[in-house]
Length: 376
Ligand SMILES: Cc1ncc(COP(=O)(O)O)c(C=O)c1O
Image (cartoon, rainbow, N blue to C red; front, side):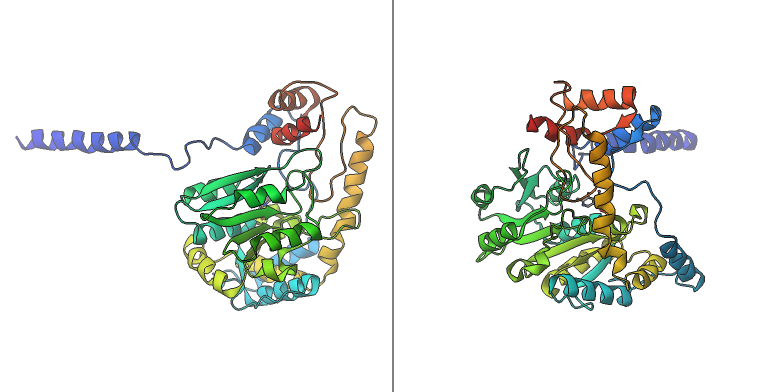
């Protein structure tokens, strides 16, 4: 009798979890494997040049690597303060003030994050409630939309079109409703390579005046700007800075995307809420790398020289493309360059991208090609 009871209990304990496993409801039902992973896998399979993801193919400065090594040897191997190492926050504050004339107090207005991605996710999570609308300008980097949806928010899209990829500010104004909580901007822009001009920022400032709408400004390519153009940070514009989260990436700036190091700067009242989420999402960020960056950042040459450094690479790349059937407008910033392939084929972007990988061993990001096609 006892043995029978035990057997039944065994079956029940197996079947109940199996049933419940089948009834979960995905929070992101439309999200599939990212295009970066799909193209990256295909590129590896065909031994193709992988251009699908935004990272450089050269090494970081050995001096920076030795600074991390030193920090580890000096014993900075335990948790850093929740908001980040003060010395690094202090230097970020000085850097922003010298470049954009805006003061962010290192104590309560700057937080070190796991790359810009965590800064973006944290800002959205801290402020977006179910039903809130967030204006997202398309094409857009792919982490904004899922973060909004996971928090019950509603992304409201505004499309930019080829070949200019200008933001239609009048159209943006018409998207604003009582429910609009945030606008996300990205300059320099992935994937179009466009940068927002001073006139764009002034227009946005004017549109948002007299509203409580927040701005999330993704500025990860702030130091990759070409042809003498100037990066226009939201922090330069007082009416924007007072409502904005500036999200930045040391990974992009110092060619160490694998370190996933970034920061968020925002006024104290916004940063207070940001940190409430940050402390439970990650608590703190890689300590020895923060110590190393705090030394490395003391020399402004490490970031001020990057515009020229990358412009030479862009120009070299475009020189190689001249004479091909690709048409293009030179990118104004970022790692990205859009190409119009309409005089080569009328295949879909995905088909052409696959053919480039398989036949020409070039792994391209099909989304970029979608934008290219619209140029034609
Ligand atoms: C526009 C944009 N924002 C954010 C990120 C992510 O930055 P991080 O690696 O610092 O998280 C990327 C990476 O490609 C990007 O292109």
